[in-house]
Length: 413
Image (tube, rainbow, N blue to C red; front, side):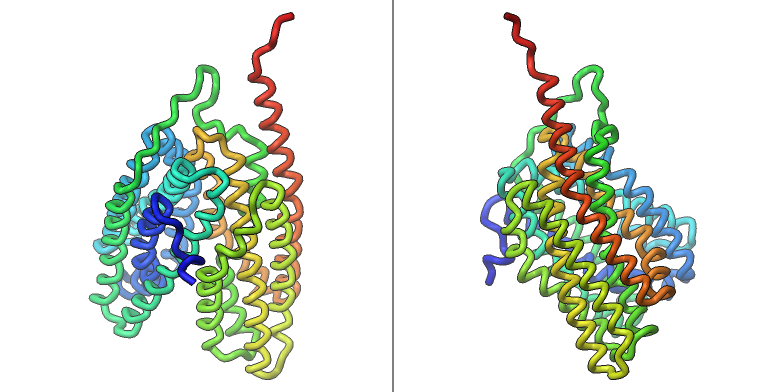
């Protein structure tokens, strides 16, 4: 069982330990942050939503230059520095007393988080053989989900006590967890920095890489599943179905444990760009099936029947999620130049920030307001994006092959 979660010894296991260290704190933070900002700080839900939306918008932009910094200055040191900065940003939430200060702290937090994600991916790319990256990334994801689950349980204790001191303790724990992660990252071997871009070539080459931009856009569309479990599905269950309230928690537990125990197994099927593209295409089809079953959950009159339908839909959703993740990791790594992994991973990872920024409004409109037709429209969007990934990847491969041929010296006869 542990072989499905714990990565091999050496740098992969240290990377997992670093991410596990702050996953505990993040899990508790995700559970408690909204109530802390509204009940303790005194912000309105609209103010919290605006601050986080603006923050993730800036974070999606900041990931590329911070990833480039990891390329040029070394991924290990940059990742450790950004982990410390993220911890400081979380710590600043402890002293927030006004909306303006909250917005500044939220922007600092999201920018550091996006940069840290890019630096960690660059570190993984520099320390792990190309053929093993997707498998190791799956191990890391399983480890992180396990840590988030434990952290969420700790956050649940703070919700139970529902006091200012309990919420402050959660934020302090999250800040310290990032500092612990930074210390663990420093135990890794150093990754040599990349040389500067040759004269005449752009520093941030990813911004001119149209095939990679298309691949990243398609991945961003697929990532709209992310706000489903945290926002859209709970609202759907409460407002559109007769399922009991505990179904929301059951679906979250099912999703978390499925990733912990099965993500590595699903990722084994992805070995190259061809299998990665097929995995993403199939993920779109599975997500369509999931959306269709979620739509059917509103038709039942029995609470238990509705809960059973929702559990089936959630099983399909998490399967599609794991298939998408496995394919996307391979594509994001393999299409990035070896010496520019940081900036490319920052660009590819911006899809997560954009999904967090746009997803809540889009999904609540599609699903809660429109009902079953919105579910089918969302499923169709997943199918279209998943089906387009294969042609987009082949375009990127042809573009790279053409660039490589152009750099070959011309032989004189």
